[in-house]
Image (tube, rainbow, N blue to C red; front, side, top):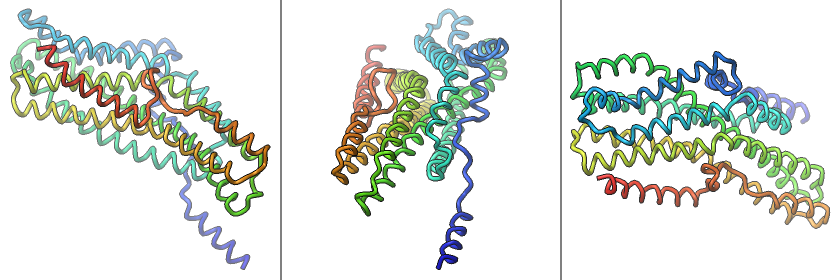
Length: 372
């Protein structure tokens, strides 16, 4: 019998996929660190180049106005430029070597890399979100190209100086802009998964304790609960540290969606555009909304898992009569809910997200009537 058990054990181990250590180190992360606030002088100069190149693509209407003073400058152009600068600045000042060092310190304290289930959770979810990111960005960029070249101004000034200048700007600045956008999107997806993994690690440990206590009520050990409570505190600090960069980015993403939806509703209701251009605008807005939902879904999962963890802790309190254990569990339950905030205003939860979208829809419908 022992030999059979050992053989089954080795067979199970051979079937385990060798997931690497949990890490957000990637080409995208290294690139953003290279142009962060803690980089050298060459990195800072390249950051200035990237922010100028990205904003030049949004300033094509200013170029047309310069060529034809009779055109009115669109206010949304300045808003797009402002949002672009805000997102670049958020990454520049927050996503730097100091932040990564603090995240790594909290992560090493958790000792997650020794847990197979947690490594599997991180890499499985990262692969899913990364594939969705690739597909979403590919479709979004294709739709943007069709949208760009079917714009009324592009058609009107085709072959003229303004159009030629924009072609040159697009050829030079386009690749830099798209690569920056790609890197930022990947990090936006990786950081929430890292925070999810930290909370999931504590949840796995607690569920194991709960299963053991269901078999034997005397199996609960105060040292185990203290250890998990300490690691949950580290997880809270890790989430708070990641929230420093995610909070302003979520606010910028939602503002960008609102601006795009306002432009779409105005063009559908009042502007005279071709049907193909209108359909492209609808598809592009739908893709931006999909991206927003992906960001918020991965962020809300952190809060949901923290609630599930606290519920598991409460179930443990029903499995013991020891006052020492109950006191330790009560300290655990005093922890506040954790998650990402929306620009530091409120925590993103399922209820707050539904309220936020209700407000956004109301504003989106009302804005075109004011700008008419």
